Amino acid sequence: MTPIASHVLLVEDDETLGGLLSVHLRARGYQVTVAPTAEIATDLLGKGLKPDIVLLDINLPGETGWSVLRSQAFESAGRPPVVVASAMSVSPARLREFGVAGYLPKPFAMDTLGTTLDRLLNSEDRERTS
Image 1 (cartoon, helix red, strand yellow):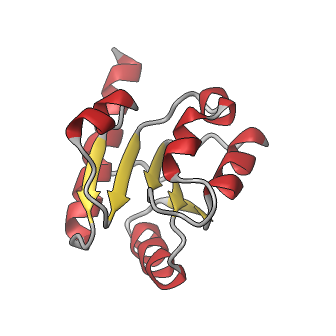
Image 2 (cartoon, rainbow, N blue to C red):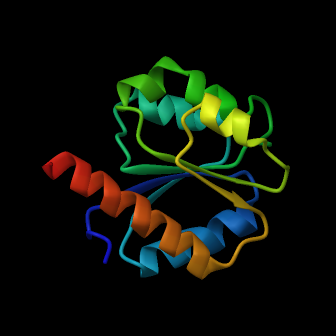
């Protein structure tokens, strides 16, 4: 079960999908902050947002999702685990290069999303208490 305090930064430019994902994640007990662009995500992180996990689309208007992972703001937020959720194919080498914890090709089942986030957050909790 996901701790009530788990906070997801959802970086998604599709307003409809972002809304559906937000509703689903909140119903599972997550706090959700939505950023429709990489620039807004970076700005939120730079202003002190420290999410427990980031659900990141890559193909965004303006900067790509990769730019969030390259930013000093992401470093300042403690490099939370990232799940890339993208309609474009992403090579495993690219995911490793950025230390991505998970990859969900769109479209994906909501249950798969929940299971993935729960697994990653629970493994993070175990690492913190070890």
